Image 1 (cartoon, rainbow, N blue to C red):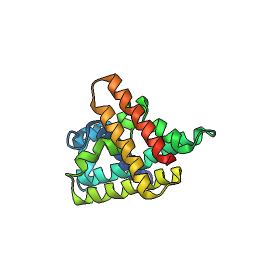
Image 2: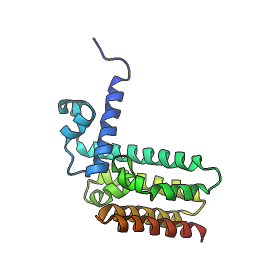
Image 3: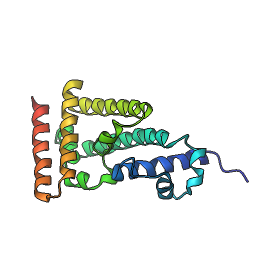
Image 4: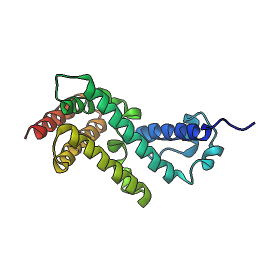
Length: 188
């Protein structure tokens, strides 16, 4: 009996979601195809009926993760009607919650270091998705792309450092300082 219409796309989407979660948490190189497939509730044998290789999956996971992050940040921005939307996004992005929820957090701080050593295909997709994120931040803050790049860089860098240290007080201090500077950047 054939699968229902759309079945293959649903399965593919489950694999991409599983990969995005795994890559956000563990990076690219420490995650195997069998691990991703298990996370999607599938056996690894079916992987190649959906993807040519892991690099193709990494590219799709980057697209998915940035779309997911933009939707999450837009939802956060829309929650608070009295506060400037960009400030709400900065507060969310540089929160202990976002720092600690790596599996659903922004993929930029999670993978930027590894992407520089990835294939040209993955780097091209990552570049496009980074530009999309800069445009989102710039539009939300009503600033030009150059200032939006600086703002996003501040946010990503603050989050990377806050996730990297084992001192909770220092980690929280890095988040707080990043928030303050990011908001000042928007105001100037």
